[in-house]
Image (tube, rainbow, N blue to C red; front, top):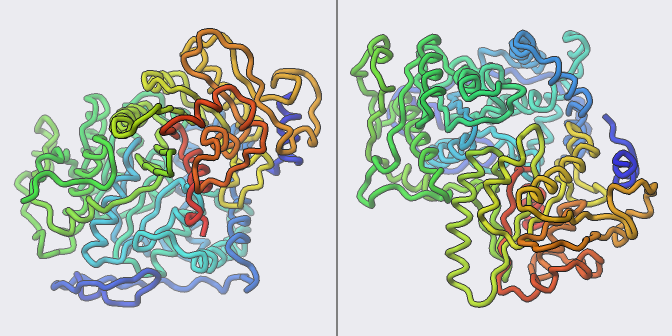
Length: 612
């Protein structure tokens, strides 16, 4: 039944220092301050062999070619079942081989002044803080992160902005065609999606001559493909938690071992407060590798004339990320002899440091104006983000771990309560949720129950029923069947947690999703889809499932978001119980969480500028 549903939805089967800083400038370059010192970068990147790029091939052509490097769902599952430590260790050697094939030398990456950051939660926010702070010093910044929300070029940023479509296309074909030409030297294989993007990011940062590169680890650290970096300026570890257990291990200690794998001999490293077990592992990893690891002080300790620094990113959990960012930036500036932060003589040698308990705390300092402005003006889409559209308020946070969901709930309850107090009339609260992968959805949803939502809406990470997505949001790493099944599992877990007596399931007219009636594509064309709602007893929260993000948002907003193109003619908006409640509410508050891909799909609908 599910397989027929998948084919009906898609209509097809899925195929599976400083004087040297005034050199050549590239995209997004702004005014740059020259500072005294002898620091100089000398990029010797040899241009790659002329790419087989045709002028008529545009950005979408490049993204479609990139998508061919995604590992299809069945192959990915086989890899997960067969993964062993030896196989993981081989990934770095394979990555180095691909870098050489792409026309770069590993030694060239040493010329990038890198800040390397890992962690379970908060590593992206930490990197965003660092990027904004150091850009305020007049530096040309490169920033590599994942995943993207709307367009893949968001992952590679120059001076805080996604690289332009023109430059992405140009550099993509240089790297892609070089790898195609040389793939026979590597058993006829091409690098997988994330590996390719990592290589592309290094290629772009070298050719665009950035002054520094901020690199966010993808998964783990020890065997992550970004870990071919040999000489970062400084490393950071944000808060640790349980995630990606099939790859990293099922305990925080095992995960900490993986994260500590980015430490390098003689390279300073910083972390934030961690539970005792994983902290001990980080300390031991630092000792084994030979790096100096220190604990960041609390943000409250970084006092200035205006008191504690204010942050552009909402939520108490951002304080530790900001503290880590301040330490990383100070160390980077000290390393490059910035006059604001002269290089200090270490008071403890390495051997003495690791005989002291607890982990040494790095001293706080008074942040500079550039640092304070950087923290205050940092933006990071899809993380603790609020969009107000008429009577509809969207609270977007891509939290998907126990720790990040806890932080999300705290932030949402504080902000939504503040808004509710300021308005007159009824306020309706709605959860829009999806979660993918191997995570324990019941444990995560349990944390959301105390929010007492009036409606809980579940949908897969599909923008439209017909999957007419642009190439940036294609995802072949999970099958459509699994996406829909997981969505129903999420819904079922919520119903069990909230003790609903019946399920509300979307269906074809006259039957439920589990029925054995055959489906044909015509049955699922637009308005033919309805949501079949059975009688529910003593409902505290109505739980509904929709086939895509667009249908879910259309029903929740009931045409009341002036910037969301409505389709009220759709039966989904007319006949479901609860529509009147939403139409008459003074304010509709929507928490969108559980998946950054869900948040990205919503942002694509809500903010058209992100697609430009």
